[in-house]
Amino acid sequence: MTLNRGVAKKLAVATTITGTLLSLPTFANAQFGHETLHKGSQDEHVKNLQKVLSQEGYYKLSRPTGHFGTATEKAVKQFQEDNHLKVDGLVGPETKEKLKHYLKFDGKLISLGEKGGRVKGVQEDLKDLGYYSGNVDGIFGNKTQGAVENFQANNDLKQDGIIGEHTFKALYNSPKPASSQAPKTEEAAVQNVDVKKQQVQTTSRTLNANHSKVLYMNSTAYTAFCSGCSGTTATGINLRTNPDAKVVAVDPDVIPLGTKLYIDGYGYAVAGDTGGAIHGKHIDLFMSDHNDALHWGRRTVKVKILD
Image (cartoon, one colour):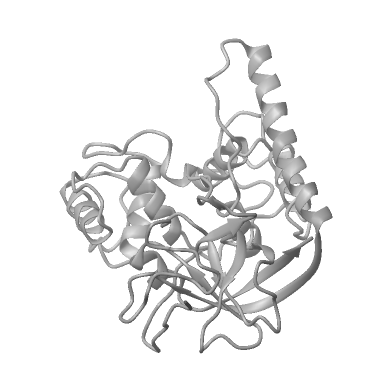
């Protein structure tokens, strides 16, 4: 049975490939650091946290201070409550996972010669993804530029070594290689970086080699609990019992049901549903969380049809 989609409904994403339900990958989140942020914390990561909270209307002070005080704690708790998280005022992995979906490019390019916290965040993220093995020193030098260029090359971006809007978006929608325990020696650390970089490059090469067609489509998102929805897709996937599935609704005349896809900003998916409002180059992405669906809104996305 096809999901019933009302006009006022917002969307959400779920993807299935050859019958195996996939979860969303873990994305780089060094903008908020790798340690839990809490009342009393004071650094660039707190400032980034405050920027996102201010952008979403939670943080009321006129400018980010970088100091995690009472106002920041109150904003974090409200954000956690609105996103159905544990309300403890601590910014740990689950809260960061939600926050990263609200990261936006501020319009300021990050390029060779720049210094500071913004550069440090980029270096940390590139290191997480296996592209950067230098010091996280906040200095955008030749090594950082080279890492950015390699990342751009593997993500079909202009190789200019500059963090602009498109590179920023790609950076925060890139799968992080599977992590392992920290290496105990410097030699092991170098080997670990090389392995992670090879994993990312192999994944990218496989993706580029296996897609035969690229479409730019208008996307929306939906949930399985809208008014009148059965929760079961046109191909029989029960989204209520499989909330981590990644399924998109399509017009079968444009993308046949069962087609495997890769959608920028969403990941691997399967065309597993249809809808009365889905015509032409329009896809509807399943998401288990209502707030994620609302945040997705309506945007143009690059869709790779996989062989």
